[in-house]
Image 1: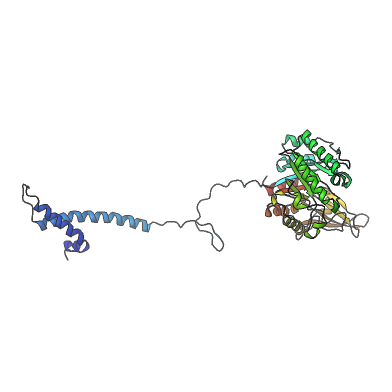
Image 2 (image 1 turned 135 degrees about the vertical axis):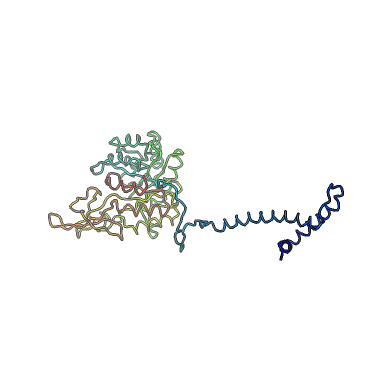
Length: 410
C-alpha cells in the first residue's frame, strides 16, 4: 500500500474535504497566469502539506505523553491512620516549634502561719512565679458575728504583686461557725465585710472555704453564695472550696453542688485526705478515688470548666497500730533516711515507706510527691477541668515545681 493510500485510510474524511476544496479552488481560479496542475495532483500535493503538519503535531503530543508516562510521580501523602503503615516518603516536615502552653490554670494556696520550711514558701513562689496563675493566701476568718479577723503577717502580697499574680484571699468560717450562714442579718454583714475587703485592697476576688458544716447548713450556704455573687462587683472572681464527695453522700452534704456552681467562677474540689489523721494509714489521694470524685462532680452538673482539682503536697506518718494519730508531713520534710529508695505504689500512684524509730515503734508513711503529681494533672486534662489547686505552697520542693513546669510546658 502506498503512503498516500495509507493516509487516505487513516484520514478519509480529511482527504475528501481537502480534495473537494482543491477542485473548487481550481475551477474558480480562471484568472491564474499559469495553468495549475490537474485537480487530483494538486489535491494530493496540498494533502501532503497538511499531513506533514498532522504528523508533526502528533509527534509533539506523543512526546509529551511519553514524558509524562515515564516520569515517576510520588504518591500523595496520607497521615497513617488505624491499620495504615507509615508512608515511606513523607513530605519534609516544618521546623519544630515549641508545644503550646497548657491551658490548665494553677491556683496556689498559702498559709504563712503553718510550719516553717526551707526553702520557704516565698522562696518557692519567687523562683516559680511563671508557673502559678492565682495566689490564695489564708489571711481572713469570718467570725460568728460577721466581722473579719486578719491574719496577714508577711510581705507575700508585695511579692505576688510584683509578679502580676492575681490575689484571691481565702475566707474561712472561724471555728466552723454556721451563724454567718443561717442567720440572715449576720449573713448580710459577713458578705458586706468580704466585699468591702476585696474592694479596699483591690484583690482579684475571694475564695470561700467554709468547713465543718452540718447538712442543715445546706440551704443557708447556697443563699450565702447567691447573695455574695449579687453584691460582688463585676469582674471580681469568686471561688469556693468544697469537700470531695460520692453520689451516695451527696444528700447528706451541706454543699448543693449544682446550685453553688451557678454563683461561683470555680469550685475547688479538695481531692485529698482520703486517709489522714482521722483514719488509719493509706494513700492521701489514691488516683482511682480522685477520678471517682471528678466523675461525681460532673454528674452533679458542675461544668468541667468550673472545677479546680485539689492536689496535696504533703503526707502523713502513722505509728503502726495507732488510729487517728497521724502526723502531717510536708513533702520536703520527710527525712531522707526514711524515704531514700522508698517504694512507689503504682495502683494508688503514691509514695510510701515503713520504718522503725529509735524507740522500736514501727511507722508507715504515705505522701504525695513530684511523681504522683503527673497522673493527677493528666486527670485534669482528661476531663477538661479548669485547672489544679495546690494545698499548699511551701510543703513541696523545687523538684516538684520543675516537674509541674514540664507537665504544663512552663
